[in-house]
Amino acid sequence: MTNTLEIFNKRRQIKNFKSEVPKKEIIEEILQKSFCVVPSKQNLIPYKVVVLGPNNPIEKDILEDLTSLAIVDNRKVFHNAPYIIFFSTRLSKPNKLVRHLMDKGHSYPKCDINKYKENSTLLDVNIEIGMFATIFTALCNEKNIDVGYCSCYVQNDNRFAKHLLIDTEDKILFVLYVGYDDNTRKNTSEEKPKIDEVIFWK
Image (cartoon, rainbow, N blue to C red; front, side):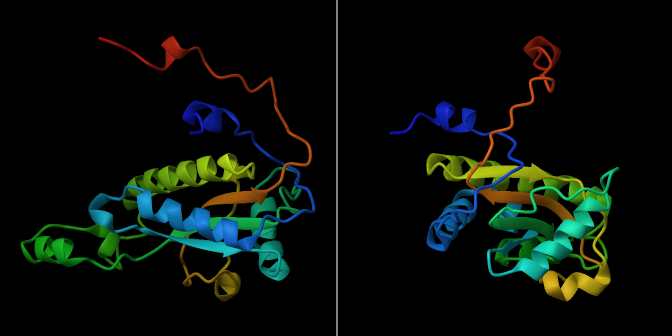
């Protein structure tokens, strides 16, 4: 069995990708496994996952343009990634348990069309996206597929919503770039703080 710590330690922030494309079947399998095991409060999965592959150059360019506008020098990042996977807001459908609780008066903003995109709701949503991304990354690393992260983007332009398979006014929350690393980037100037500055025992 592969050592879990070794898998997570393989992750690097990737900026450049080889022209070699991971097989679609492998990406589909990893996405399916990630979906099956990812935790979610009441199993609502309050986000949408959209996959842009090698056959979606127009959509990838649109997303890259939205991303580059949020960067000081307007440069494009990860533009040669074979797969770009982004997470956006999604109005959750209540399952039986949630519907029962809602009928009893409980509030579920993720299922409320007027509240599911509010910042207070997105605090929980972003945590869940982080868990999905972590599982997905580990499973990719296990197969020597590399993943880059990006949260530098401007709000979705409604003119492009249909091209990105999201609803008008929905928010793009996080982006993954997937492929094979062309030049591993390890920025030694981006040091973590010391562990005793972060973890406290009482």
